[in-house]
Length: 364
Image 1: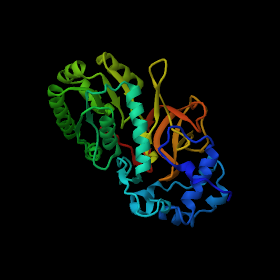
Image 2: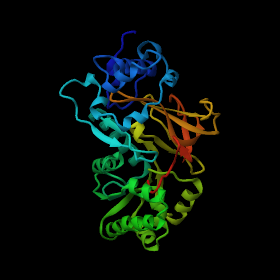
Image 3: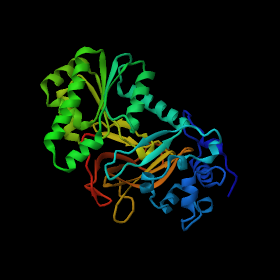
Image 4: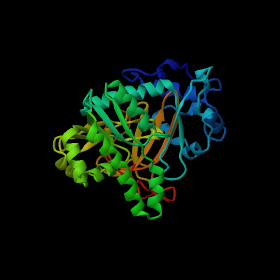
């Protein structure tokens, strides 16, 4: 394999590297080198019908990898840390998926990547309309979920107090799966009651929550009044929202900027959000670290621009390598930004079933 420059993988950096193919070549050499790769991929490579070190030349070649995401449900996190980081081994942050389609999958996010994502999110919050200096009410999961960690850190860097209300999305999904609608309603009331205490007493102008919870807020006259009095920036993430619902929420909360984020634990980040002229949102992966393809799930071929398909996600960084992951999301394929690799997406929505299991979003 040609000589590679591992410094291309270093983060944080303000702009991505100029040569994405050289970046990919370095990433593959890193993750599949005996001295630099992690135990997970070095073990998996022995069962591949190709040699990543000699056969992966372009991003399209990532399609050759099998989707091994299911193995992240059981893999020891120590096996996910590349040997090239040396000793002592950096202590990772362990973030898990929501468990929508089975037991959770884990990622080990190392300090360099965590700093990169934090900087991106600070930019995203600030560009979206975050009110610096006024508190952030966060009705999102913490615990094993990355969203709570990043929201707290971003709030701190933007000079705002963080007011967290915890959320257990896995419990809500269990309730939903067994048809316990009344229990789900009581749980939502419990979460919103805590939010009301904060809204009534604290200096807050920012709110981060999920579309289902914000929809529940919009159905409660007391909370509508409090949000309209105090909140000027709302970020919705963690579940999907359709255009009609978004327009209704904008009517109810007419003085509040509402924006939407889309991310995934399995890409270790969230996408850039851009509003279209008609008020919809388009999401752009940050390539070359994250590359999307929107495909026909039956053929694996990319759909035409403007058509709906299922999203294949690729994450390539120094800390983790997750290629060719057919996700539970469908989306409209949208042209990417200038210089971007792969597809951008709009009108993201869950598929009905995934890996033989019904997809339940619940409140997150």
